[in-house]
Amino acid sequence: MDIIREIVGGGGGGEITWEYVNRQLTSLVDGKHFLLVLDDVWSEDPIQWDPLRLSLKHGSQGSRIIVTTRNERVAGMMGTTYVHKLEILSDEACWSLLRQYAFVGRQEEEEECEKLKAIGMELAKKCNGLPLSAKTLGSLLRFKESKQDWQYVLESDIWRVVSTVDKPVLPALLLSYNDLPSHLKQCFAYCSLFPRGNYPFTKLSVIIEWMAQGFLSDSMAAASSSDEDLIRVSDEYFNNLVMRSFFQKDVINSRRIIQLYQMHDVIHDFAKSLVEKECFTLMIDATAVAAAAQEEFINFSKARHLCVSIAEEIRRIPAFIYKAKKLRTLKNIGAPVPSISFSELFRHLTCLTTLDLGGTYLEELPKEIEKLIHLRYLNLSGARFKELPKTLTSLYNLQVLILYGCMNLCKLSEEIGRLVNLIVLELTECRQLSYLPKGIGRLSRLRSLSDFIVSGGVEINGGCKIRELQDLNFLKDTLRIIGLGRVENGNESEMACLKNKQQLRALYFYFNQFTSASLVDEEVVNEEEEEEEEEEEEEVDGGDMLSRRRMEDVLESLRPHPNLEKLIIRDYPGAVYPNWMMGSDFMMFSNLVFLELSNCRKCKHLPPRRKTTIP
Image (cartoon, rainbow, N blue to C red; front, side, top):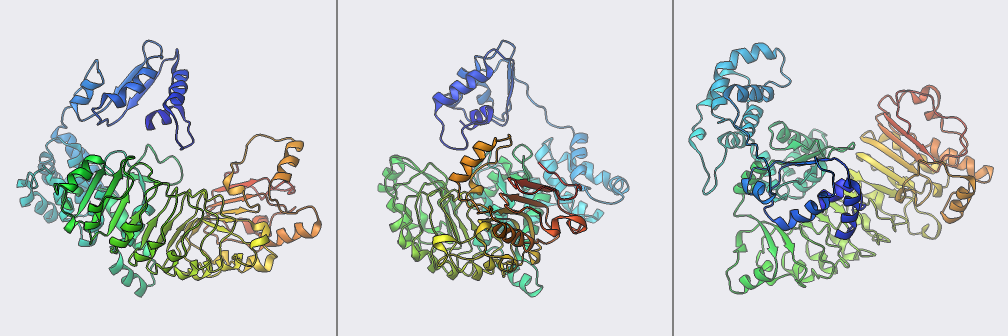
């Protein structure tokens, strides 16, 4: 279904039926020539392949499907008419690939390369024609500058190690792992919890999980003494693993500003072999429950990290899970399980530091969540509850709270200010959330806050004002400020001190409440349609002069730091843009590469033209 969704470009990320995609795909290819490339196919199940094949049969004669795989049985199952087997690389080709990674970024590359070529060719022979070995070994040698260092790698005893306990491992991979410092070894091994195969991930998503596991605690102490940001330290950790080719950039899925990464299957298997007695992935179905009842299941006494996929027929968490008393990580990687209660689980697994229930469509978060006193990371993405239990705010150690896509969430706890260790608060696509409670300003450790929703109207006594942004000076990357029409005056917006937030790279200014939940239509809308929309939306009263000038003062006082790279302003009711956007002042924003001004109907003049993209 994922492949078909990509082809037809529909579904909106939600649930789609086979009937729908079959009609769409059939219509798309009917009578047309097409070339479809399916890369790195592993499944040998014809049931997964047949539906796609049936739809593609409607294409015109001469269409082609190219499949790449490392499993010959896959080629047979798909009915391949021609098989092209790739040969191993020659020693010269291995050396060419190895040197590409080993000498990247070095000055006098040709001279250095020639000096080390003899040893390099010997190392290339040890790659046995495998590109991954050459790439991994080259990434290791990138950190070895002298001839003696290269010779030491060549003469290492590890070349004689051809397997772990029961699975073969590439010697070059083992060499690179052994060269890692201890703090990077544990960070890399933890990533074995990621699903195997096509699983793109972002840098931030990995970093915040490392933080929750305490992998950065030593660095945190060092960072505080040198006034260096913890996120910057963890950023170096991640980049180091990228440079050593343990992570690789996902060039296919990284279509937007955010860079995505992946782990090669072989590297993932290696990571899993390092922690096979501590990390488990389970499919919990009727068979697993029956096996547990007969005491034929896994011994959880040493389990530290667990990924579960719960089948639809299971209505409660199996009791054998509760035996994992020392469990630190629990992740759901399966289908939604909205009706399952986690109350008992919270009572038993009190050592959890990471709890990922994203995609479960949880209908209620039990108040027993307060039992997880060590919890640092909580992902509730896509949950269907309307509010969070008050007991959540007793989780003093919580650092990451992800509520992405909680469409029904109406409010956060009024005591959210108690979560003083919170570093990440993700509220994207929480469309029913109309304001944030007072106390957000006390979360001074926040590095990532996706949305700040200004209080106003009936919530004016219980919600936070924009001035609560004043002390959140460590905010990074992107911040959306929603409901700026509720801000009383320029003095209040000036107290947000955006000019002091030098790590923010993208700012979204939404003057209306619900703009963030809707896409702006690029087509011209006639005046009658605009008037109808204005009546339906909660819109700033820009009709009189005083209200308009008030909004102009508000935007004038929201001057950001010059490091800003992206600025979006929507539904601004003022007649003029602020001084910092006009004339020579705007030229100070030399890093700005993207500017969007949407539905700013009363403004007659645009900011001065510069090297900026205006959609």
